[in-house]
Length: 399
Image 1 (cartoon, rainbow, N blue to C red):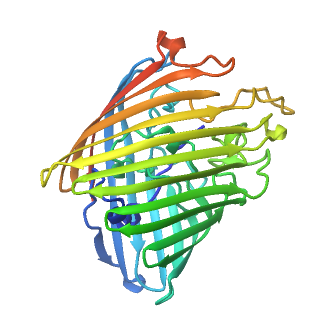
Image 2: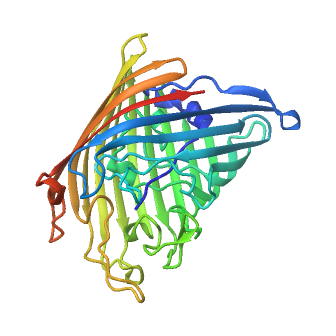
Image 3: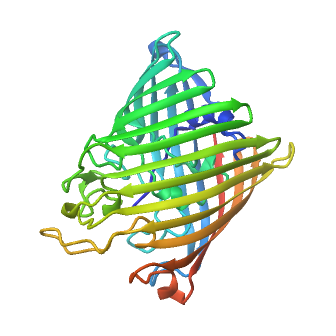
């Protein structure tokens, strides 16, 4: 399973920061250049790296080191009837308690091989008729699910929650957005999970009560059957979607509320996912997850310092060990960490930013309450502990 996406582009994300309020990091204004017949183009991006330490890692996995997190270049045309977004680069992810490792036992580095489109994380054209409340986009589109961004620059903490881990990623598809006063809604149809099968609808509805309060409801539903012959990252996947059997043909619904009071930003979020049985891909019964989190960020006046953090609860249910699929070895599937995982977690991040430069220390701890059934996994096989600590020291440049 992998949840390796960039999410919204830098310029696109910047346009949402007014709604998202007091995120720890603030992007500078995009660089505007003359694109000749294309008109004015906006260029933005960033790069960051981090050192890390982890406790209770699997046998043979390195518990400390240094990695590049992201290197991203975003080019946008945001005026006129025909607009576009092109986002190039590499990105990694740091989900607390569910880190991905490469073949050498390090935390997975930023990679340009995460999507079938290679280094193209997002690339889509938008048609924006004059004076129309509706715009239409097509191409490699960002997910509309959840509060957290794929790009860690726009999260108050580099470490991400398990709610984020089970959400959809970027999709090849089409979408329409309606904006009327304080209400906006986006509906997207595409392949999600890089399956190559266009059968998933995603949607996001937002109502902005005032400058400090906004309600967001999001969801996704699979209209058909993804099937056993789908692809991930351009290669055949033995787990059918690259994330794991549980993600195939799944549905999701969630909501978050954005509240801002002065320099304080609070965002509670809840989320539920469900996968229907499908023995052809090894899901022998109903499978689901539930997650809840509270995100917070506080900026210390006009100083360059802020403090971000979150707490989460995550619970998952897997029907049983995967049944035998012809030609494959039976496997146990999971949404995150392990089958039937139940966990609580917290993370904090004091942050410093001066103009284009930023640095922050991230610390998180996840604790497995128990595992239901006979799966018996926690972090116990490595140290006898139910918990895992992750700490990073991160620095980067935004432009």
